[in-house]
Image (tube, rainbow, N blue to C red; front, side, top):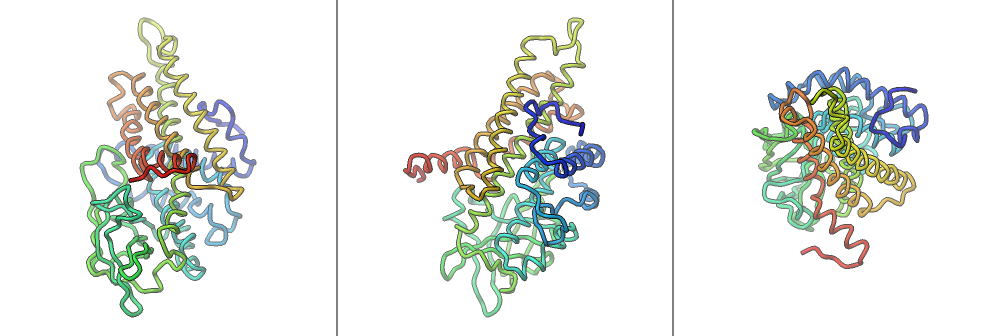
Length: 393
């Protein structure tokens, strides 16, 4: 097979079996031809192009990780799922996040937290992209303290629950058909998950404007005022935040793959630009300091990719722990920040113009650096694991 990435210096893609690499190349072709032509205009407008849903539906990969729930094929390997995330993101991080929120956070919450009836009720339609999902955990006054400080409440009343509270930064929140809302049970103080359907009385979602990153993602402020949710729509296999943490463990590794995709996308742009841009009568790729930036970027990519390959192997072997995903998220997103800055530097003044694409990667990297646990919080998770001492306050 051809079309291997210039950034894949050690040939990591060759670790995939042929049938999985075919799916990766299918996604690569799709992102290049169907998504890339839309993104700069959508990013500048700060709008999600709804036609992307139909285009992703045609790709047919939303259910690839969930065998038996709308996809006839065996579940993809963790390595392929990670590389697909990388592939979407190397074209555009914010439009790829639409897919990641739906396919990862929302679908995995149902897959991991729902019982068999709930899986069969929701996952096939989600895998077909006939019903779009969102994931509502972050709150206006809470961030890293969500485990113990969740303010959204749930109160049991007969065969229904009454939800009250607010959520913030909810991707897909303005148009999702199903929103997985996390709330603290007033009776036992444990966090529980609820699937709230679009149009439920008391549920409102307002688009967050004026963002400088992830401008294509329609993040929402959500308010819940006496929202009634049937007991049948409570995720039956989630009884505490410990269960929620298992979901976040898996999705956090996906964010690390996103960071790798951003690195690769920015590096590829910078490499092509360095070969084409001429100064002093020669391509700037012949300048020693430009080569230094490119090689440092490639080193960050190669090291991060190797870490994520091993992370996928740990997931496949069933020995995947919180500290494994936390180290990857903290390390890879830090390396991403370096690469997007070096890549933008190679473009000089052109690096701040959207027409050259790299400015979009530079801006979107900041969102990836922050969500799914800050570098500091993920560092303390790893620190506790290696020392046996908690430094959380």
